[in-house]
Amino acid sequence: MSRALGALVLAGVLALASACGGDDGQADAKGRSVVVTAANGAVRVPAAPKRIVSLSPTHTETLFAIGAGQQVVAADEYSNYPANAPRTKLSGFKPNVEAITKYNPDLVVVSDDIDGIVKALEKVKVPVLLEPAAKKIDDVYDEINDLGLATGRSGAAAKLTATMRTEIQKTVAAAPKKNLTYYHELDDQLHTVTSSTFIGQVYGLFGLRNVADPADKTRSGYPQLSREALLTSDPDLVFLADTKCCAQNAAQVAKRPGWSRLTAVRNGGVVALDDDVASRWGPRLPQFAATIGAAIGKVAAGR
Image 1 (cartoon, rainbow, N blue to C red):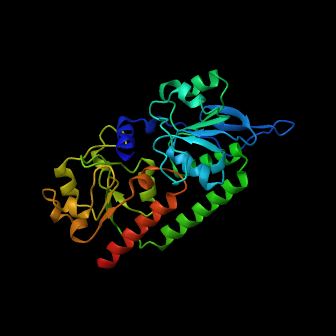
Image 2 (spheres, rainbow, N blue to C red):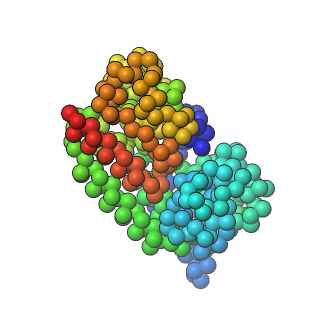
Image 3 (cartoon, rainbow, N blue to C red):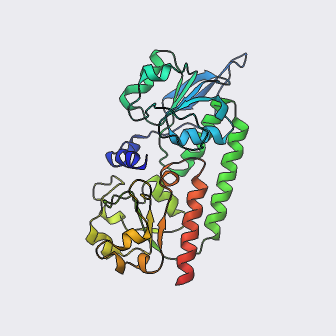
C-alpha cells in the first residue's frame, strides 16, 4: 500500500484534491435522503445507506471509527484497517464500475476520481462521494463530518473530530519547543515532502523546520533529495515512512554512505513510522502527531 500510495503521491495525484465540503446538508421532506456537499458537488444519498463501498483506506477507517462499519459491504484491496473491514479485490487505483456495482451499493466513497469513476457511477444511478486527500488539517475534520452526515452518524462524527482536535492540541502543547529540523522519508530513494503538503503541516504544528523545502524547485511538494543535500542539511530528526514498503529502520539507514555522521543517527533521532498511519488523513492522525511529539521530547532531552 505504501509503495503504491507513494507512487501516486510522487505522480501528483494527491495534488489534484479539491476543497471538500463541510457537514452541511438537507434531508428530504420524509427524511429518506440527505444532501452532502463533497468535492463532486451536492450529492443526494439515502439517509442511512446500508450497502456502502469504500475505495479509500482512509475513508474505510473513518466509516468504522464513526460506527458505520456494519454499513460497509466492501472495501478496496488496501483497506487493511481495522482488521474486520470487508477487504476485497476492488481497486481504488483502477476502479471498475462493473466490479463495484456487483455489491449493489447505495453509496460509494472515493478519494480520487480516477478514470472518470465518479461520472461512471453517477451514470448508473449510484450515489458517490468524492472526498479527496486532505490539503490542510481542517479538511480532515470536514471529510469525517461529511461521512457522518452521509451515513446517519453525524453525532459520532462530531464527537470523533472533537476528540481528535483535543488530542492533537494536547500533544503539541506538551512537546518541547526547540528549534529542530526534520526529514520525512517516503521511500529509500529519498523522495520526501515539504512544508506545503498536508504531512508537512502536521510537522509544522510542532514548529519543526523541513530540510527539504529548499530542494523543491518546482514547488510540487514532493521533491527527491540528493544524498549530498540531505547530508549537508544534517536534520535533527529523520522520520521513516517506508518501514513497511522498503524495510527501512534506524539500523538500516545508519549503514547508508555518510549517514552515520548525521545528527539524527548519532542522537537517536531516527523514527520508524507506521507507513499507513503516516500516509492517511483520517482518525489515526492523533497517533501520527503523538509519534512526532514523543520523538521531539526524546531528542530534546538528549541535548
